[in-house]
Image (cartoon, rainbow, N blue to C red; front, top):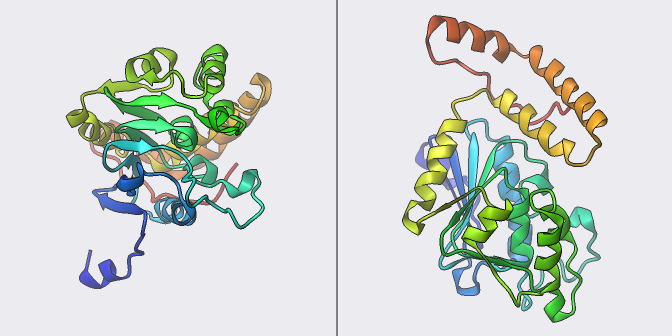
Length: 271
């Protein structure tokens, strides 16, 4: 990347955005506030996700936090969108909320609670440091615990989700317990967390961008549909991919025992 290109890269107040060999690391960068989501981060996260989705060189993203915490939810001193009427479409903190279909790994480096659980619920693969803790304090401050538990119920048993919501942070899930319940996929020593996230990202980015996109999209869409409708929608993704040049390229590369030359990622063209 040239010096002029670097100068044109957008700057963020509350995030760090870095890419190396197709792997993007988005770091929540308010360590003095435990990476709480304020009005600025609320505006910057959709911009960062759109940048990742639209950059053909960006293949996989890792979302993590700076300092001792991952994300403690909304900053009560500077609430996101506090001057606007907020509805479900206004919450656009995660990749999934921004309809990003490239693969995303969450590397939970510490405490994750409240609105920070959105990133856990919506990432494709969730890794956690062994000292990470998870809890939901909404009801403890008089707020309804709704959005995060609804999304976490796609990963965890219902009873575990209800307990998380209703105890209001009086109990905290350890990383090991979160792993047992399916909230996270792997627990690692803190000094191995980002290395493991990069290892997985490197494995993922070798594959066809279009095949990865349609696989992710079909699986997440299925969470909102019944089995029959999910399979029908999934078949449409299969048909769309079969018409893509990466299918013949993948077969030819396999026969010739060489790395495949995949077509660049195309953000549009949802089934």
